[in-house]
Image 1 (cartoon, helix red, strand yellow):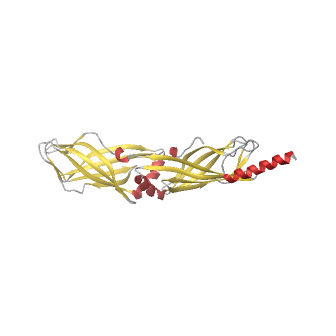
Image 2 (cartoon, one colour):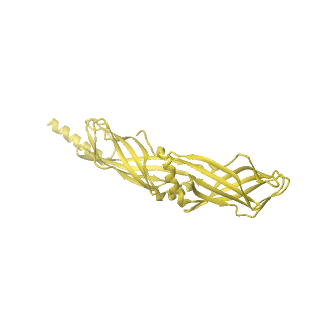
Image 3 (spheres, one colour):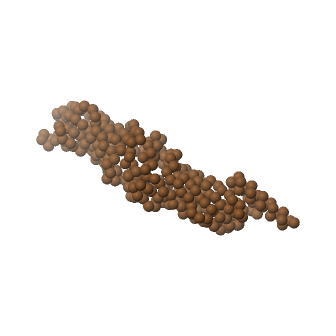
Length: 310
């Protein structure tokens, strides 16, 4: 009679806990499983898709075995569902032990341009979220609990594109004429679904005894060899007198539709990209390169979406 009563209490407790979906102690002294750690790595990458391989370690703190029947989850970037994943087949959880689930998720690269625009709208801030559910059974009683993880990913592209060095450039051999580029300040301009504008202000000093006429400023931006932006000064010619400095404003326009191509190349290079910026001055009909900058841009996107403790 006493044994039957104890079994009845345990059965009722299991039903109550499974229905409310959170952890508590059972009369026999065990709790439901929990996510112990989670990390990710890149899998197969192509122009159209990106695979994310996720490792999820689930810990069973109880003294009886459990079964994980299904794991479903979605990865969001600024609320945009980029990818969905799920486990395949049930996995047994040993008593007071761990099990590692290996999950494969495919990201649709065509959603990258939409994410890029959302990143700019958020002041170059992206909220990385993973939302999901783990479902399983203990003693034949079903249970489920949510997975939620979030991290922020931030960039400062306009500051990164600034140029603060002073460079002397020869613009003519006969007579010998020079200009001094004293810096280029860059800021994010307007943007829409297809185009991102950057505003560049170049400070040009004329050290010569004669007037220098700048008829145009022209620029190009390459990422891993892909031309993603071109721009020029649309205003009238600027006259810089002897010993004077002028601030010349010009604009570059990024083709947002190329961001998925840049994304794929960036990941294939281990989340590193080489950015090449070239700026030209047009004076007396000639095109003179006044500024070239090449640097490496590195991210840790999956590191931002990894969790090493519950």
